[in-house]
Image (cartoon, rainbow, N blue to C red):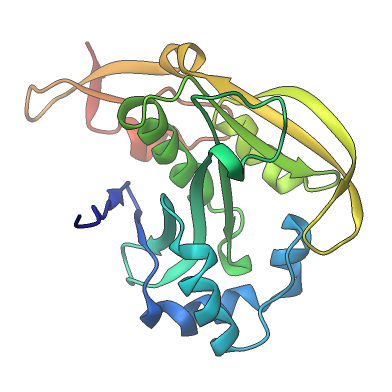
Amino acid sequence: MEKIVYQLVTERLILRPWRESDADALYKYAKDPAIGQAAGWPPHTSVENSLEIIRTVFAAPETYAVVLKETGEPVGSAGIMCGDGLHSAEMLQGEAEIGYWIGKPYWGQGLIPEAVRCLLQRCFEDLGMTAVWCGYYDGNTKSRRVMDKCGFHFHHTEEGKTSPLGDIRTEHFMRITKEEWETDQIRILPVDTGKKRYLPLLLLGDDPTFLIASYIFD
């Protein structure tokens, strides 16, 4: 059976499957210890190491390169994990987990919240999930802010977790249900086409200017 390849598009990003030709770009950002340490994985050691990650870890379903529309360069990764890939025993059948990271030069630009909102839509509208989780290790405040911006709510904390690096950490879990996500949507009417669209409700920290400049409420 032919594998179906999904590509998701946002205002500034293209989320697409990783390609072997992305190895140089992946190594460029994933070699930074500040990236992997927070998420619990080791920095990439070479382009060949990054290529192997693309062929194995990033070959999993629903794992996307976060690509800048403007340049076509992959600058991070985001993915949806279901079933055996889930990190907490409290996650149930029909629920998923989202993971993400982005290269340090792009921190603070709102790109990962943009990607996560897109993946939430895919989870709830396309994959039929009833809830989506995110986890972050104690002290990773940047990741926590992403979850807050995207409507996640604190669920529980698990102590004594062994990270992929082998150290023991405390991990916090956030969760959003389909009903909560639907409540966070707002219906607006594009001025120029007259067609109804659905965009995420503006959350604290969003810049409303570019989101609603050409829209009026219906």
